Image (cartoon, rainbow, N blue to C red; front, side):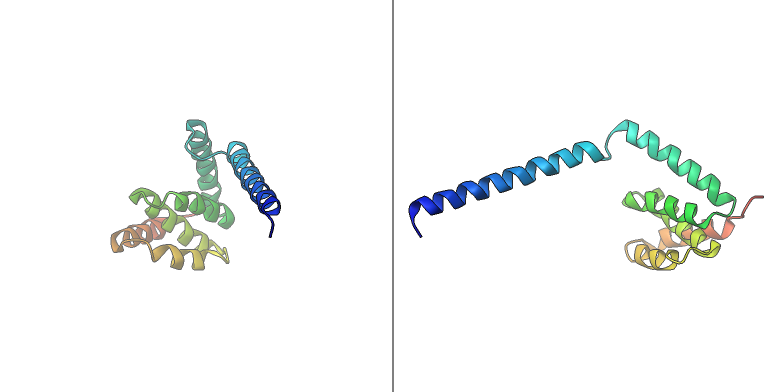
Length: 127
C-alpha cells in the first residue's frame, strides 16, 4: 500500500470519527442529558400525572411511572418506588411488569424489595 493511499485512509478515518462525534454531541443537545433542572421538573410532573392515572387503575401508567423511577434506581427511594409501581402495574394487568420486577430485584437490596412490596400491597385503586 502506498504512502499516499495510507494518508488518504487516515484522513478519511479522522473525518468519519469527527463526524460521528459531532452527530453524537448534536443528539445529546437535542435529546438532553437529564441533568437540567427543567427536565427534572418535567419528569416530576410526568410522574405525578402517571401516578394519578395509576391510582385510577391504569396499568400502563403505573408501568411508565416505574420506568422513570427505575432510571434513577441508584437512589434508595427511587428503587423502592420503581419496585412498587412495577408490582402495581403487574397486578393491574401489564404483561411486561413481571419481567421488570424480576430484573430490577436483581440489583435491589432485600430491604428495598421488602419496602417496595409493602407499598405495592398497600396500593388501592381509587374510584
